[in-house]
Length: 401
Image 1 (tube, rainbow, N blue to C red):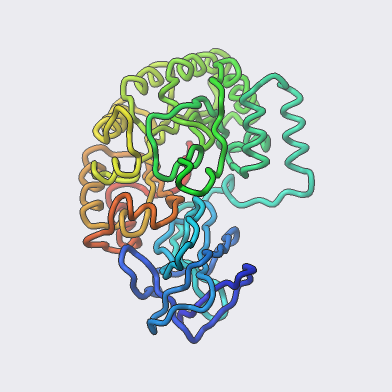
Image 2 (cartoon, helix red, strand yellow):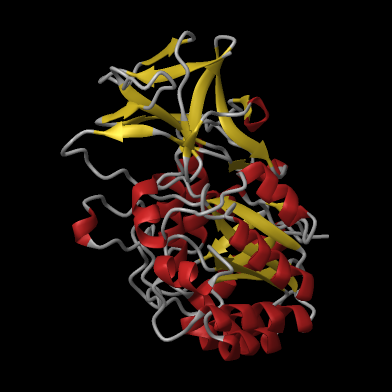
């Protein structure tokens, strides 16, 4: 039996096994048992203020709807369905996942899509992270990028920033304060009229190749199999600084051949990407929310480029022999629209990639549907993931070999 999980005004969670909540998959509907898993460790329950859970019996819930944010390695399958009261505030930029109770245990609509030890949730002892940060910063106190990463690691809980100080896995190299897209749900620069703050503050300076290379070479000295990545949540679009990136890569490779140099990008400038490849870039992760031009443009609101440029960058990286991943921003009712699945599979069959990394898009669902529209023929996210898996490996993390 699928029962209601809800919150009161103080955020306390309650279960009502006798009432069945509905979910939003682009259309409001009942939940299938195969769409639910027990809430994994690291799940964060969330109150949806002034939003009442939608119930099968048609009556609005008396309390607040409950949602959940998933830990890394899981992909959302459904949204919480609710009725919104007048004056309800906009929701902050999180990935709201349907939650309910089954056998007196919290369950979520999600699928396990990857597993990597470096990305498992970690609890720090009191002062542990601060001590690691202070130790690393003391070795390079004038490095502005390292100071930015200290903020990201400590205040924003960014895993790739924390990895710089933990000396493991994939480490962040933020490089660009500017962007050529105006994403509806930008996590570092949000329009004031949206009514919610951006979760992170964007860097305000142009990082120098020397600052970036010092962090990268130190990371590779400690972890020869590690990864460093340009393009992080605290910055704009790194390809706008492709000359600095190319010089950084050359400087890194002048000191060490260890590790993998990766670029996270919107793929908007194929010529700039070619510059980075020629300098020695080894891997690229290109972000998009859709393989349909209208849906892509409605969310990214690109400035001076189109989806065709993004797809050309993917082809370019593939033809150059890079490890190519797609950062596919998924959303129930959009990603699983039948026309989206067909467009994705057509491209991926023509241009194979190492991995499609499914990402739960962090946004108020109403904003997103307002921007890109409700689906005509949603298939269901689990079926969509299975269809995509026939065209490319699915996961959530860059795995180096």
